[in-house]
Image (cartoon, rainbow, N blue to C red; front, side, top):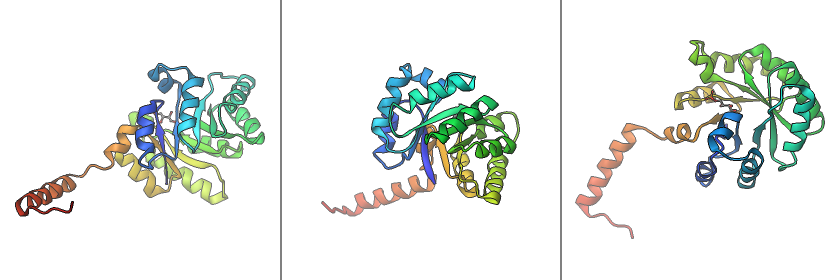
Length: 217
Ligand code: E4P
């Protein structure tokens, strides 16, 4: 499973990248706003840091302008994936940009039918939003499972990029179902390491190291 980091914060990406945890990065307008940075500048910095796909989202809602924005974004670096919304105009932009050989991430996916349309339009990634479905008392994991079944039924190569991940359990469930990629905020990836028995066990080992004066160096 690939890990994408869902942030535009350079330091946070660099920290996880040094540990081999970053296969790519996703951004969106809200994350760019939070960073306080210019979209082109910060996206270039991220692309310089990370080898894998870096999603940068268009701002337009009509296909023609989305395509123009996408063509500008892909000039930033070879590893840009143009992110477009799951609308008919977004799917038109997806088809045109993928036909031109660019990676496209179709975002704001909330149903399996939408994911089917994105795959037909040639999307490189489909981004179903787990957390936002959970927010309205639906089960985001059911959507990941449905898309996995449908894509496998017909051999679609579009990668399932589980997005809007809010906790470590979302990562675990996505892995169980077979999502190709998860994108999660740095804090969620960091929280995956937590287990009270690891802390308790280490405390006990440290006590014995001290008691027995065990030294290696
Ligand atoms: C990533 O591609 C998505 O834009 C992001 O995961 C959305 O997360 P949110 O629902 O927590 O804002």
